[in-house]
Length: 411
Image (cartoon, helix red, strand yellow):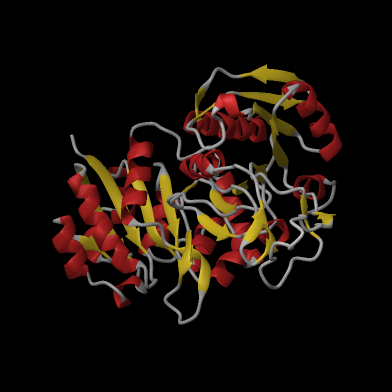
């Protein structure tokens, strides 16, 4: 029997994506029924939605034919899953407060089936305290979220978090729910990840750096996104593609990375996988430094960079709920990592041996030790993707086990 999806289309410019969603759901074998809000009909028509769903489209709570059989109850019970896409700020507010003054909200209040919402709105609306409160309430009520994503808005010059997830992302989330998988252990969480090296300029053509490829940090960002988190990835110079569904901020120096991290806060979970340079040239040259005729190398005065991990891990209202750092060592790996965890104030440290013979820098595999206040757990050698999935899942489990409420949500 075909899976039955009831799709509620809200009144936002992203409503056009919902027509593609209907097609993708039907391609995957789902039967789709559509409810259009009054505002949604300003963007898509019942005719277009009906043609794609091959079913009648419902629009009116007070339709005499439908309500003779209490249609809104029947609609809510006949589906295996209710999807709201786009879920506007207005719809989220009505859902959070239990309103039922039109067909869409009456169905949502009457349903006993899982509900998945795909928010879409202006970034400032998404960041508004009222929307944040509504999202927290809906999460507490068991509503699943997919997105929103970061990007350009319909409004000229506007960009940020608020774009509706793409149709294929929503269809994948529907598949997970209908097959019994969780919608994501980090849904509603904001995860901050740093990745890659930093480059500290000596002059316009030379810099101080290290050998980090960014593969582990990028894999962590992708793993967090796969568990439903809104992810901000702050990346130093790498040659990797940006992970899908992740907001990427590209920086070059340690100072830029520190500024970007502060800008991205608050976050629920912060994982500092970047190899940030400890020092920079105190005064970088404006022009290329030429060799001296004597052959003597130039003297470079170094200055210490801000310690990003130590600074963010300090107690305070903006400290993430769980702070995880990395320790790339070449000797006494566990001992140095244990000391680093205490010195930096991190909750966890992921320690690994980056000696040249290990091939960790630039390679695709990693052997790590998870250092916490409770002890050390050594993991088997495995791919960096596998390390990322295991680390992110353990972080999600920690947040759940300690009953840590979502502090910062998706905005």
